[in-house]
Length: 299
Figure 1 (cartoon, rainbow, N blue to C red):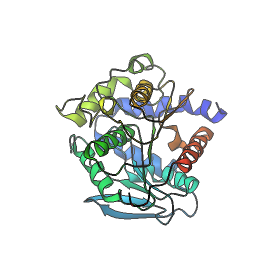
Figure 2 (figure 1 turned 30 degrees about the horizontal axis):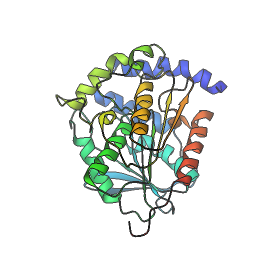
Figure 3 (figure 1 turned 60 degrees about the horizontal axis):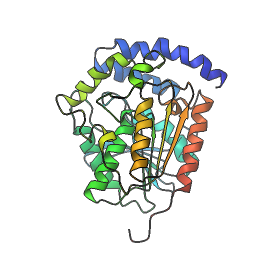
Figure 4 (figure 1 turned 45 degrees about the horizontal axis):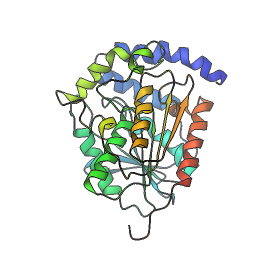
């Protein structure tokens, strides 16, 4: 692990984890994340951003002129906070590495908009983007990673054109929180406070069934799906969300690359400006993207 990483973990524990553990209002979490993004997450020089409504929701295009497949990326934030603004710098770096444009939908957030509002918005964005001539690749992190996986299962179920692949950083795949790492890594996760998981879930679900595959893609059917790339840190509370998702996907015949990293924080690629491991992970994802098969003519 890099020196920066060893220094960053205790800082995150004192600042970010404490903020997430103590904040009582969604707006407090939203303001803090937006502020951090402005101060800490910088796009590469020359990156371009454009705002446009997509399927009736605001969305942000990143480097729209690039020739590669479209990266349809769903941001994290527990379905409560986060936005295209908090993640567009990371996507600009990935767009440059992969030579792909990116589209970040601003899906509706809880508690103002309960489940399945975010899922419906993600599906609408995919329907609007699925005919991109170079194909579409789904991506996401944390809750957005789970949302991307849930979207993939729905695409398959509805018989829509499949994306070329899917990648996810530290995805939330099981809102029943039945994985062991929720408990075994509660003391080692430097960002996510395990004691607030149920509260955040109820803020989003508001009485809906946590095992619904649109909320917990761990229980979905992906048979016949495209290649998937997943990563998580070995000390995250969501570690088992990735490990069990990998096993389920492989059992259903999918080609899955699983990368478990030691002692890295939740969704570390977003810290690309500070953390060498974040830049290395973006490099690895870009290489994986470049190896995906292009869409077949007429598909």
